[in-house]
Image (cartoon, rainbow, N blue to C red; front, side, top):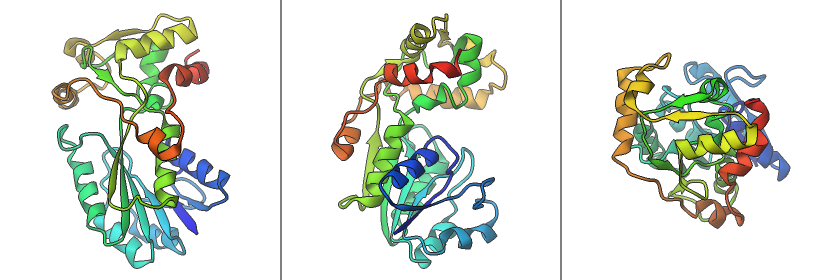
Length: 259
């Protein structure tokens, strides 16, 4: 068995790669810039990535669609299992890209699983929140809404189980952390492990004052407020046999990125 991992240099992709290798599974990690190249925008890179693989972890960078032509080519090449990384509530928040990706995967004609992940912990130290945390103030127009932040290690673990285990065909898994925290709570935890004052401002005005903020993104976040507070799921423990990683544990390990 050989598993293709798209986005293998990203937060989940490299963890999926590492966990598969730790279980003795042959892996083909690909990315736009790695030694084994895969680019959604360059179909000529697809055949080499798919050659000889039997399962694939499918993800696309933000703003890039999952091309149905690639999925069809994967099935034709003999891929028997596709695991798609998606997001929680894509229909409700208007994420048309991932709604379309999920529809493509469900109609692929081979084994499939969809992993709907909540806000990544790693957004704070590897992703787009990092500059704000380093600067000491995070502004998002989400007020006191509580999120079930999830660690990328746990997302990868669920994906690996779906890639390797039985009983995951035609399943959609909602993956969260063990607790629902507001962004203010998350910033307080980061403050406690870094001994720095990390503030949170949840107003639209503060968000629009941040570099790169747009009305379109403000509307996207505001739309999420209609979902209310998040409710943690038992997916990680049910599939992996262990509890998900608490945010405080994540923050303790990630502290060097903020100091």
